[in-house]
Image (cartoon, rainbow, N blue to C red; front, top):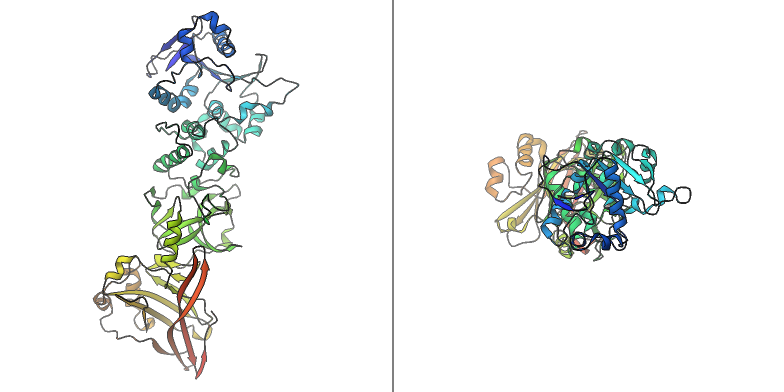
Length: 546
């Protein structure tokens, strides 16, 4: 850390050991024309420096520091050797700490004239770097364009809170900064600008307690790197709590899970992660993977955009859950739906799907055209289960293949089809007059074929075995007939037709059929195989409406 001596104007280099750094004042300002840098201070005479417009704030800072009995001051224009990338990296990564450790911080509002200009219109409130310069110092004094003291952070507390949307209790105690959620802190920077795009991220390092290398020229990647580093260290899901555009740059209907800039958090006020603060998740080469969690995942039917998955991130100030809306594109893989704002809902409006269980799943951070192709490939010729007036789909194994939006059992990963036989399981509960029926349907894929054979049995005849089947193969398909026979040794061969005796002693015959179906999804036209359960009761045949 370099400090300027307030009397001699000499710049001294101190080690980072706090015991060797003397008490110092620090300056916060907005940059202007003809600033004096480190090289100028080393090479130019005092007379030459005095003629520089930017030297006025250096001289004024030193004068104020001497008045406050401080021998040293830190000024960002002249106390960093920016020709050294190592020194610049150290300074930017340490800046929050340097402002926090200062004896006093002088804020020069170069465009503030009391009585003529309102405090809230000052440029200082709009700059990215001045956010940490506001939050970190304990003792902060404001000076107007004439150099007169006009107030302190404490005396201006309410006005500052109204201007910045930062609660006064946080302004008066910097330790409270780190108690705020990730999205809350991001929202403070949402309306601020920096000259360089990379500084949108670098100016926030201290506010999140993050240290990263500086790579000027990387553009928006800097803010992405900041968020990725936060994800590595924090379990706060509100980092994903921001609004998205209607489509990304490539026109995809899916949005990035990681924000492009702090401005995306503009509409976030205060979302508390609450009890969701400790899920296990990590950044992978695919996206954000969540492990063994019941999710905070719901199946939502409340949006105009039809049926989407709601991923809960926390609660708002009214204790209503706040979520983002997702689309399932492939087994265990989700994307955020573009054009969907942060979603606040009543828990009574969203039902947790009966087909959702704890498991590993992934949300893509940056969907691509390949994601669209993957979405179509996992659905082409897949088994769709339309709603029916006779039956309710109660369970699917493996359940991670089920997409509640399209009501389709997505095709399992390709390597399963290298097995001689692959089984997918569905359990249906009868409705109304068929409510006594507990029907299990097996879709049997023989290697080399795209269409499954359909087989059925009465689940009530083998309740223990049925439970074991759905539990054992909850996360992967049955890949061999011998595996099925070990659990159901006395059953089979199965057929695609079965009869039940109903409660009124009438007979019901159920037959499983496959019919061609199709639908237009985000990835284009998809051809399905629709599972049809035909029911015949007392010689009358009824088929549900698809």
